[in-house]
Length: 212
Ligand code: SF4
Image: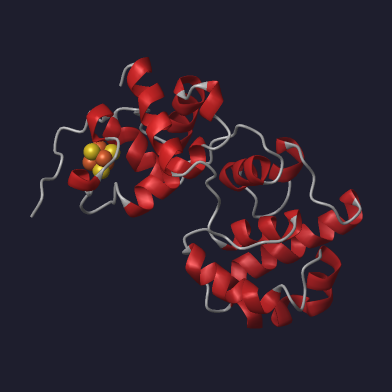
């Protein structure tokens, strides 16, 4: 994709959805961190179902600690890998209480030091909660980046670094949401919906689908 095509690609996605949002439900930075931590290899819908019950009961690090590991597990057991996620969340809550005054820190270094928080989770929190132009490459962004020619790369980090270089600054903060939503609903894994795709004119994918 050439720079003018990339500009047009994002201008088109922006026009269709000027204010894209994460589909995870949250009302505070801590709730966001918790939801993202629980969402690894799980759907946003599944995470929201669990957190709708958990957050009214416990939505601060201390309240989660007070639930205890088993108490926490009882709220999230419908989510894959819930035991290890509960363990990481308990450890993270302890660190937040002991080292950050119960607040979620706003730097990559401090976020990635939290148990269960990797680069992708830190990128989501930095972007959504702190407005930083980070790029959390999930399975959708990895696919869209490679398929379209926007940001080819063999690993999520390679795609992330390409995107950070190639996305025009005006779109940097929201681009990660546009790409996720585009991958989730249009440029789908098994069969991209090319005939319905708003950015087909700028996409380099050789095997575009046609109407059935
Ligand atoms: S044209 Fe097809 S492959 Fe390209 S971005 Fe759109 S849906 Fe994806």
